[in-house]
Image 1 (cartoon, helix red, strand yellow):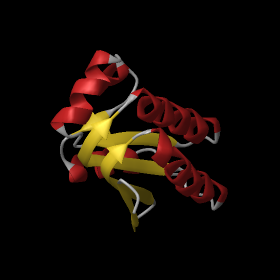
Image 2 (image 1 turned 135 degrees about the vertical axis):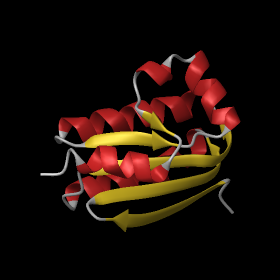
Image 3 (image 1 turned 180 degrees about the horizontal axis):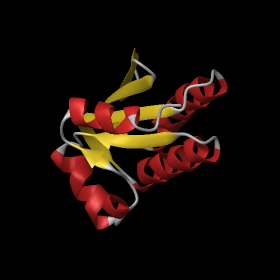
Image 4 (image 1 turned 90 degrees about the vertical axis):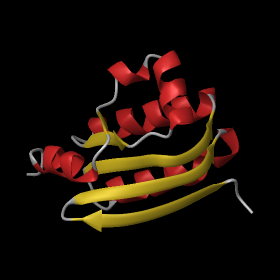
Length: 118
């Protein structure tokens, strides 16, 4: 059984991907495939819910950056929602809090992303 559970739902034009468990090297391909497939299916607005992340390593950070770059290269937007204390600490140490827009409230994040909908 994987160490990471991934669920996806859509609210309006926003694709919300909830990650629960360990966001580490072994789990990266599944997350990458989900976002890539959504982008190829014309999704452009993404919210990654990290509230249930129990572990985040450097490859998990690398994955988040790669997803961010992939989405923005396709004229999209990717934001982070409710990083767990563990995820928030690693994002801070790696200075990723300056790269990502991070929201603690889903409705605020959805409102922000709605401003980018075309």
